[in-house]
Image (cartoon, rainbow, N blue to C red):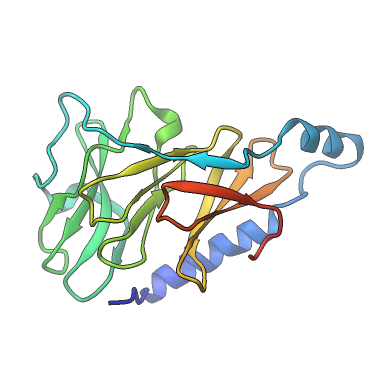
Length: 204
């Protein structure tokens, strides 16, 4: 069933798109801009690695209280939804099958607060019940294409993902802001987030 976003999700996506399209080339000028662009070259291909369960963290399918499910929640239909939950200093993907009344972990911990700042996540999205993704706050885009059974993490070494969307062909587009703030790079994934390819032309 295709994902039909809520009005709040649409507004959030529109805001992120505005940031993406308006952030390139701001904040630096002249020689500083040229130097920053030369120093910050985007990797051409970013390959994701599988996320394994860390010792001492919750197993997939563990019930969690609704109170720890924070921030954005994305629903693919009236009953099935996806979000992030913070439990005991770790952030987990969580899912509901009853419209948000109850939640369970939907994979391994994606971020350990004390030790993994680059792996931080804030936003979530869904193409359908099987393909889910999370990003924001760190340097990663985490994805699953089997409904949470396996998760993969793509780490962007020179910048931070600022938006992830689905394009008209059904593929994932990731927009990554350089650490200097001088550039925004576009990456395309045709395999649900396992590999990301740099796209020189924004909007492809």
